[in-house]
Length: 180
Image (cartoon, rainbow, N blue to C red; front, side, top):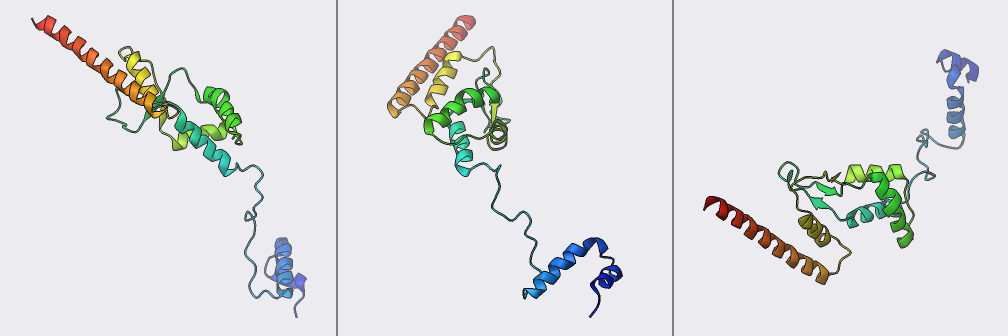
């Protein structure tokens, strides 16, 4: 047998005496190999958001009406845009909070909301363009709104197609009058 103090000094473990004491204790309990470090492996994470709350953010963000860009579709075809009057803070405070209350689901913090918004969704805020048609934008938002029933969406699509036909006719009249 060797004295514990001597063992610690010989191996330079004076500052690690507690580790050696833990190993001794485990050996006495019958462990042939030291137990794996258990730090961070517990299930008690008081600040972790519930999966239900995180999923509610995703569901909420999918319900918001979005635009497709007229201008940058070729550079980034999957990017969609929200109205330029909105911000992530205003969406969180005004709409998401009400959504959670209505659905009776737990809400996440604003920073977690922003993290999910930025990392999982390819959403931008629509910049006002001078040559976009507000009527087209209005129809597209209504058509892509998941809260509308199928009949209302069909009606909006028909109105949108009629609007596009009128715009084409108007454009053709301008070209015809200029060339004639």
